[in-house]
Amino acid sequence: MKITNLILSNDANTTTRILILTGIAWLPLVVLTLIDGTFITTDITMPFVKDVIPYVRGLIVIPLLIMADNVIEPMMLKTSAYLRSSGIVPVGERANFDQALTRLTHLLNAKWLQVILALLAILVSWILQADYVDMWTERGVTSWALHLEGDKVDETLAGQWYLLVSSPLVSFLLYRWMWRFIVWSMLLFIVSRMKLDLYASHTDLSGGLGIIGYGQSLFVIIFVVVAALVSSDMASNILYEGEKLVDVKLVVLVFITASIIVIAAPLFFFTSKLVDLKRRALAEYGMLQQQISRDFHHHWVDDKAQELVDSMQPSAMADYSAVYEIASSMRIVPLNPKTIIVLAAVLFVPFLPLALTEQTIWDVLKMIGNSVL
Image (cartoon, rainbow, N blue to C red; front, top):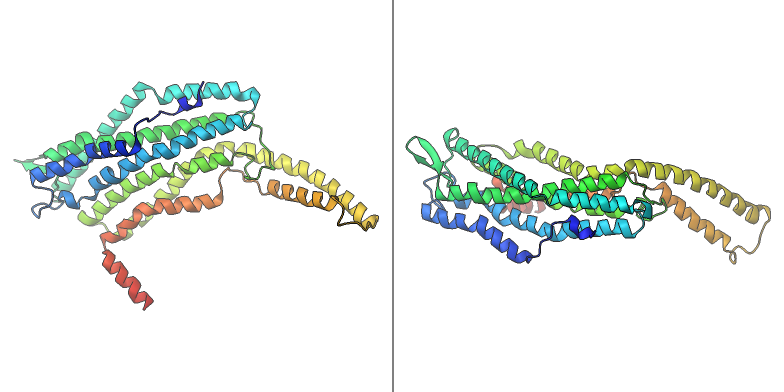
């Protein structure tokens, strides 16, 4: 069984896929709003040119989700290959490992699952329609996506395209990656239950599992996409529904914290193994360290040896001390703590434009200038 079968392959050129899918999702909206006369106008509260949501979904979210194929998929393939070829998954467990890959391949590529994701995307799109209608009927915010026919609020041509094509397309691409995250987490869970060949002296401070933690952090791309969607909705609420920037600070903090927890959660599958490995290593290495220390003391203190520089014993003791330090510094989760800080910073980036909903770039620059002067 080929490990590459675990991942849905994408043979098309990335740039071509971005151009085609962005063209389908966003370009018709420009054309149709120009036809409807809602692209840029003062007759409605939210002309297309001032609505950040379709811009974020069409010009940011779609490219990021497609580029994730070139970042996360290779990581999944390389990590799977590493687990097998490095010996972490020993010979006795390789049949179980290959069997798990086969099962998850079928689950990942199931046609019925793709249909469910597509139906879910359409359902969410109709929920979004209800939000636009509420903005119109309850808060008086008129939109490029809707128009009034008699006493009923209905979709414009652009609104119909957005609700039936653009929004479901974006949602489907996102749900597709969410499902991949779930399937990958299932694989990590299965691997964590195998008898793995791990060593506390490994310099990644994770017994050899450090590559899994690094790979897991790349899923932040998917959560950045979600952050961009949340940020665009917040911006719309601030611009057109009277919310204040201070009102969303807690939401941003909770979102970033929750995202990091979700990204790191599958790594905790290995915690019990790493705790046990560290405990056994400290006991075994500690006993050996005691013997080495005793021999060193007898040779250089009790025997009063004079040829310290020419001897290999001090060097061997220093080397062993370094190995013991690695074992004692082992992490119980295969994730570098510095990575958490990087993840938080990356997830915060999509929310930075929210500051411009209440202050322009010029206002911010003037404030900085006044502070410096």
